[in-house]
Structures are given as C-alpha cells and as structure tokens.
Image 1 (cartoon, rainbow, N blue to C red):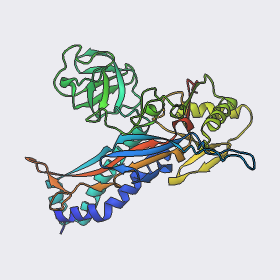
Image 2: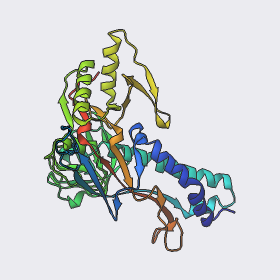
Image 3: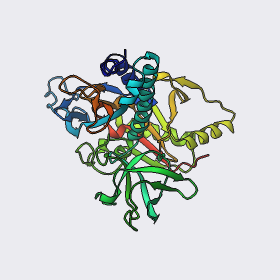
Image 4: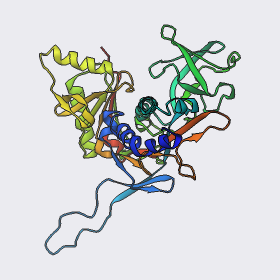
Length: 388
C-alpha cells in the first residue's frame, strides 16, 4: 500500500540521484563542462585566492653574480556568498490517497511532479548562467493599462512565471510582488499579470521584472562577468580582471580568430568553448555555406552535439543575448558548492511536509553554490553581430 512514508522514501532513495544528475549535466552544455567542487567554501561564502601575473623571482645571471631576488606570486581574493538554489514540488493529500492501492498510478504521479521540477529548474538555472545575478529578466517600457506591462523583450518570458517588480534603482514596488504572468502578447510585447489591479504608473519605465524572490541573489553569470562593475568583491583595476569585449557588425572567421588570439596572448590560457545565439549560429552557417565549407561537428559531455571552429565547439543557447558570441576557457570556471543537490529534511528526517492549513505536501530540493571565473581576462565576447 502506498503511503506518505512510501513517497518520502522514494524521493530519498530513487529520485534524488537521477534529479541531481540531470540538473548537473543536462541543464546546458556550458554547465556540463564546468567542474563542481567544494573547495574554497568557507562558511556561507566562497573565498578563492586567485593568482595573477607571473612570479618575479626568475631571471638569468652571470656565473659568479647574485641570484635573482625573490618576488613571489601576486594574489587577489575573490569573495562571494553562496547562492541558495531551490526547487519545490507539491503533492496533494487527495492524490496520494487516490493512488494508495495503485503503485503504477503513484509512480506516474511522482514522475510527473519530478519532470515538472526538472524542466523548471533547467530553465531557470540555464538562464542564471547568462544573467548578472540580479534576477532581472526584462526591463519595463511602460504600463499601458492596469495589469498590462510592456517590456523591452519577451525573450525570457513565459506564461506561468511568478515575478516581482523593482524600480530602476532597485527599490521594491510593494504592490507588484509575486504576480503570475497569465497572458503574453507577442505583437505588442506586453504581458498581463494576475492579482489586484495596479494603479496607473505603479510600474514605471525602466523598472525591472525579476523572477520571484530572486532579486540580487542569483548565481553570478556571464552578464556580470562581462560588465564593468566590481565582481566577486573585487574592483576591475587590474588587467586580468578585464575580459575581452569587441563590437562586430558581421560574423567573419578573421574577427573570431583575432579575438581568440588576443584573449590567449593576454591570459596565457586557451579558448575551448564558444556560445552564441540562434541567429548568430545561422550567420555562421551562412558565412561558411557561401564559401562551400561544411563545418564539422563534435560531441560534448552530456550527449550534446555542436559545430566546431578549429576544434572549438560552437554551442547555441536560448539565453545567449541577441547578436552575441562568447569565447570562453571553461577551465577557468568552477561551480563552488557546499554540497550537491539534497532534499531539505525536517528534524524528524522527513522530506514531505504538510503546508500549514492546506491538504498539500511539499518537498524542496536545495543546493548552495556560486559560479566563479578565476581569470576574467581569459574570456571574450563579440557583440552586435547581425543575425540571420
């Protein structure tokens, strides 16, 4: 007979490993290549000593002359708080009781909930990899009427999302919190949110739409890495803190090779991974097609396949900004984590807990982690590429 304890045991013993594997390797090709480590985790923070420059205690000399003076390595400490990543499922008491004498129905129930959790988690964690840590998914252009909001882009917007709104300066708009997107108008680039009617001008131009509860607490993604502000608690006053950025109106092999050469010459590293948007990939294919060249493909970790540029995989990602190509050395990235994915357990060891006042049980998957790039200068970005 299926009971609440049966469900609890199934989540612990059967689903956890499968879900963790999926979230670690199936979120995106980029994440699949990044090493996960518990090193440099100190309490609630990541404190990573990063070496830059070269050791100065090296030199040549005469046979009887003085030895080179010692001059040790140069270090800077990156410090960033571990980010709290959550995924929650809900199972009603009615559903559990309805499948009490039908193990097949119970398995289907759990499978459906876990597939929904994995799909939502994959979407949001992949989005975070390209974000700036603020949780912003769009900027408000205007508020045409009550609960209808016009945005600058619908690229990362889907019906069912629960969002918060903040002013341009990051102040909470209290009347516009935890609003579910119930309708998207692609033609007008507007979304309709649920809840009480918003007075006119509640959400002004320049306001930020963010995933619920995520403002300022998401993983430090590529947008932050290629920004101009301090990162990992460190100012951009050293050359190794400044990634390569170059405008490129049209795709060309020469432009990409020039960027790769500049990155590798400056950092001493090796570009081994390219990420671009859908339109940029089409521009790449058109460029080589007109020259009668067929790009080879390579197989990546996690079962992904990608085009290859001189042995470097070119991966397309839905969250890569329009007209952008990232040139990365994935060896410089580490996902520092306190632990791998785990279920939150109560003092009694239970995973499933009843929501107070409701006939519903909930279970939460959690991971505490932060993405750190130890050599920003080893990364590059070409932007403004005309898409096809």
